[in-house]
Length: 154
Image (cartoon, rainbow, N blue to C red; front, side, top):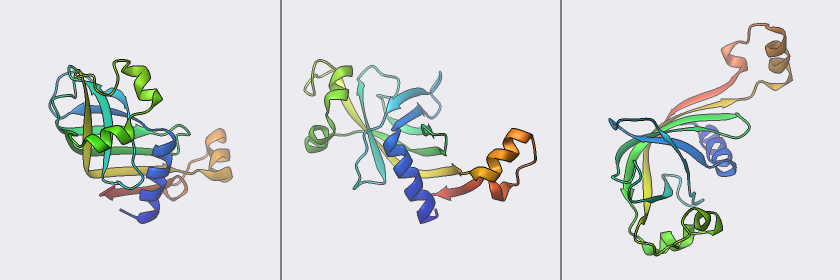
């Protein structure tokens, strides 16, 4: 994947760290989760969840990201596994997580999942002033005017 698109994805995802995620082959729909990001780890994201959550069993999964400004869209796939490194759990625990899990970081019903990203497809949207005018007036927008697209490791 192009370095610029990869960096654009991670920067946008950091400001809007929400993802719809679902285990491969599981019944039901994807659900929204708040990703815990680590600037040093562009291969994984983390989630806190209850042990009875539909993604808690782990396994192959796919997630969709649409950032706040609708300037980056992504579909990422990988494997969800329980994170057992206590230092990562400590590092990622914060007041926002505590609001969802008032029993605290040592609550046995709360687990931390790591999503090891294996592959992704990212679209960036940058219509610019000319593209926005075309959009408003119904003038056709060429593929080369709408942003960038990349497939590969995220």
